[in-house]
Length: 141
Image (cartoon, rainbow, N blue to C red; front, side, top):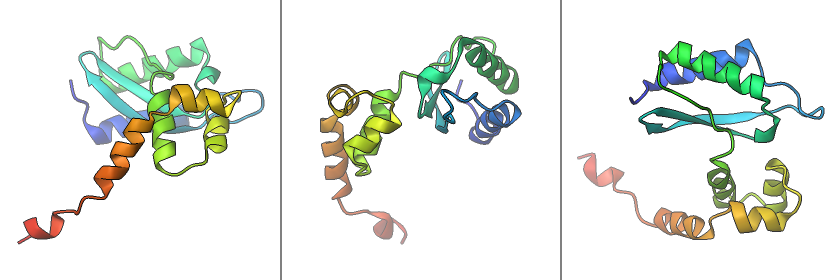
């Protein structure tokens, strides 16, 4: 089931406003965005700076809030870690320095971030595709 975008965004926002993520070692947990990555069962992934900071009780809170707010009966889990490679790759594509990406992802070394969490081929392909001209003007007529 593909979730209605505005309802999805409003429900995630309400969950976070109702009960913000707890501090982790005196640092604020930031959720950058949420995305529906699968439809059967509906799977929602949160992109954040410290996925390990989400305790089991807070994950249960989010899961229950989203199930109720989005009227999902078959959603089983919220995975705050599975999209880490996408997050690292998107930061690299945006030109964020590796050491900054390492700190955002809370890794011990930049080498760990570069080897496991940045898909260099995907960054190269995305940059190559951006070199193509847009066709917006030619279809507007």
